[in-house]
Each structure stands twice: as structure tokens, then as C-alpha cells.
Image 1 (cartoon, one colour):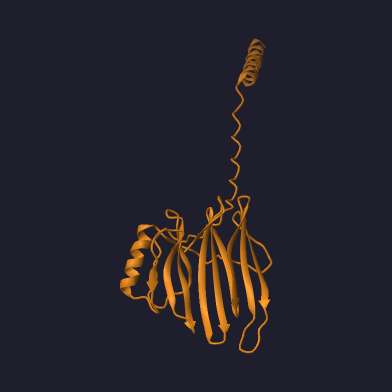
Image 2 (cartoon, one colour):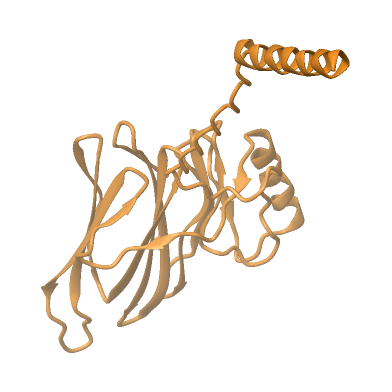
Length: 234
């Protein structure tokens, strides 16, 4: 009987000690809350490679194909060519003080090498194909810039004369409004596109002109600083 009583007392003592230890034990630290996911950046990034861009040999294609964050400029093939106009095509660094390079009907290896040296030195990186096309009278927002393209007839066509239209592209940014381009042309079929790269927007204007004695293509480009709403031209 004494043995059973001692065993019972020992068991009660052990249970009491365990309970007291459990009450005094520090609570286990809870797992830290999962970090909130970062918001997706709103700026459009169209640079596709960390390697400098290159200009292919052969017939130069109109358009902007590279961007330099260092120079804050776009490398673009600009100018005009076609039937009835004097060909005037150049590799232009829009937004930079770098001098344009005249291009012929085909770009040879020597010219490509000289241009590629500039592209590498100023770290012009290739642009993607994610341009946004503007529609007349329909504002387009890209980055923090709102672009509006208006087109209105100014004179009807007649014998051997195509209709005349005025083209105007306006940008609104940083509380300002700036006219990127405004011109009147006979027989012109303009197309306007834009793309945002960081705090800048590259605006491209391509016009096919079809009128008596002329069938040509023209291309121009502008770089807009969204922070100040200032425009750089070629």
C-alpha cells in the first residue's frame, strides 16, 4: 500500500511540474508576415538586349531601332526617298549632338563599322517592336504622356492634284502642352506611332506621298522628355 501511495504521489508531482513548466514557457515566435509583392512598374521598357545595337548592311529601313540611356537619344534612320524626290537618308541620333551619318541606297561594311562604333561607344541598345500606333482624333497614353493626332482637310483635290491635309500631333505632359509637329501636305498618308522608354517617349512619323509626279516615303522622329515635356528633334 505504501508503495502504491508513493508511486501516485510521484506521478502527481511530475504532472504538476510539467504543467507549471508549460505555463512559464515563452510562447513560440510566430512566423514573420510574408512581404508584400512589389507593384509592377508602369514605365514601358522596350530595350531588348544588353548588347549594343548594330545597323544591318543593305537597304536602310526607316525607323528608330536603338536607345541610349546615357545620351538620352534614339538612333533612327530618317529622311526621304522614292520617285520624284531627291533621296536624303541618314542615320540620325535624335536627342543627341552626335552628327548624322549620310546613307546611300545601300549601306556598305565600312559605313556599318563606323556607325556601330558610335552605337557601342554611347551604349545604344536595341529597341523592341512594341510601338503603339496613334489613330486620328483618339488620344493615346504612353508612360505619363498623352498624345493626340488630328488631321483635317485643307483643300480638295482636282485635275492632277491630290487633296491637301494638315497633320498635327500634340503631347500633354508635366502640366504642359507641346506641338510635336504640324504640317500641310498634298497627297500624304501619315502614320504616327510612339513608345515609352523610361522617362522618355519616342514618336515616329511615316508619310507616304502619292501625287502627280511623286510617289515617295518620308520618315521623321522626335524624343520627348516626359518629366519636362520638352522635345528633341533630329
